[in-house]
Amino acid sequence: MNHRTTTHRRRVLAGGAIALAAALTLAGCGDDSGPKAAKKPEIKVSGAFVPEPTMDDMAAGFLTLDNAGAADKLTSATSDIAGDVTLHSSKNGTMKEEKSFDVPADGELEFTRGGNHLMLEKLKRKPKQGEKVALTLHFQKSDPITIEVPVKEATYNPKQQGGSAHGSHKSH
Ligand code: CU
Image (cartoon, rainbow, N blue to C red; front, top):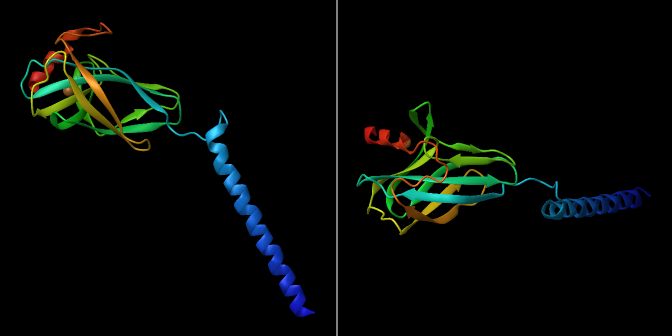
């Protein structure tokens, strides 16, 4: 009698575990389908450019990150032509190196002249207008994104927000 009861209970437990595993599997599949599902960051890069630098050892990079998903962070960048790439913010004419930039959920992060920018430092070669340079963006959650960035003329500024702000880079 005792023995049968125990066996019965075991069977129930085993059945429960299978049902639970099935439910987890279904939940996992659901993540990819539903529109409101399970947010991962979905980041796209647009409008990237590097103005041909006036200095030999340093160039700036600008781009826009559009995020159609959950919040993420841009944590670093690398380039084939630069020994180092740093992230800078610029507010009221004061430039500051940042460890990371938030890429807001369903939002965008802009790097524009006079504002946030990437600094390609310790240049291995000076990029010339018409060339492309490789830039890889690293995120807290998303996989790295590598883009080919066109080198534009030194004064190129698609947003027309005071192109001279970058003159202050001679100080660092
Ligand atoms: Cu800077």
